[in-house]
Amino acid sequence: MVVKQLLGVARVNFLSLTLVCIALAAVASWQAGHALRPLLVVLVLCLGLCAHISVNAFNEYFDFKSGLDLLTQRTPFSGGSGTLVAHPNASQQTLALAVVSLLMLAAGGIYLSYRMGWQALLIGIPGVLLIYSYTQYLNRWPLACLMAPGLGFGMLMTLGAYWVFSHELSTAAWVLSLMVTLLVSNLLLLNQFPDAEADRQVGRRHLPIVIGLRASAVLYMLLLLAAYAILLTAVSMKVLPAHCLLALLTLPLLIDLLPGIYRFADQPSRLTRYLGLNVVLCHLYPLLLLIGLLWAGQPDP
Image (tube, rainbow, N blue to C red; front, side, top):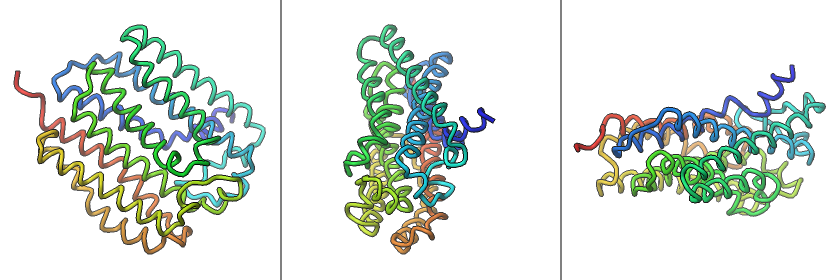
């Protein structure tokens, strides 16, 4: 039973986003002509999972302790797992999971610093600070709360993994990471809509609270359209191969997502379907980029 509870607070059904980010970084590094070392890829993937599990477990623990979990109307995509509401005696195990995962991440980061140089600390130190501070502190600063998830998965995880794999930071890697940043920040932004009133009661100040749900819906649309504009610009400038235009196959999701989110922005109870579509988009877009890079193949020697 304890294992089931720990899997719940780790939110294992959402850890797939880490797999997508690390896989995109690995394929981008390979496509740029760098040889991949399987053991290094596995190590980086394990560290990414440790980071994701830690931030999830801290979020579950702090939200339970603040009383937020008792106020939130959960959906399959927002409001936490509800594990600690059902099993409050598992709160200390949840905190232990968060801390142990963070320590494992720190240990792996120190190892990479030893093997690759101090520059790895530029990924590890901000990552550790971000994981611990997200729920407790950054949720009280609207812009920090908006950008933190995207920076974590885009700039620290995806771009950082690319650097570990290739020992360089190419323009293509920056562009791919920026698209991931926008998608993941948008993922968390939309997931805050159903929680806005409950979050307000415990002192949070993210954008749906500060500027309202309708304005946040407009911001969501702008960030999402920016991700597509960056893709088109990168391909037109030959930063990314034309094969990456496969990601445009996600455009039908936008036709459904954008009008629905704007229409029901102030009716969070009717947003569940769109939260699910947004999760699909956040996975499918980088997966199609990955497939496009595989299709393009390595450059001629």
